[in-house]
Length: 88
Image (cartoon, rainbow, N blue to C red; front, side, top):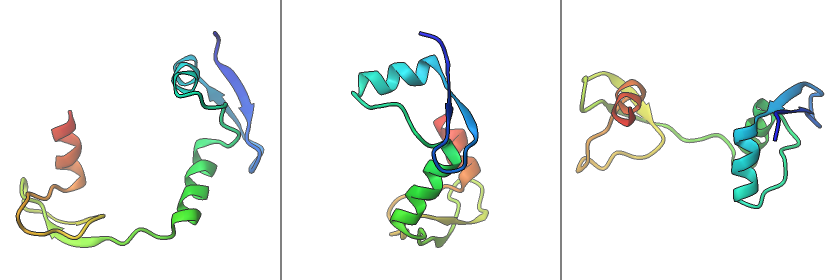
């Protein structure tokens, strides 16, 4: 199975549907994407509306940050950088 070039139905840009992505889609019984990554993200955002962000302080580095959930205070909150580093 080789990489496929697909033309986005929204913006007309050509994007690559990699062999790995094709295998993943097939394993989930999904059809090939018809939109590029940017157009898929824009459509998803329009469907869900703007995400409400909440102010917080990172438990790891102490930086002010915003998170997509309301911090309850009983669990540590990580900024984007510390969260990414923890997932490693």
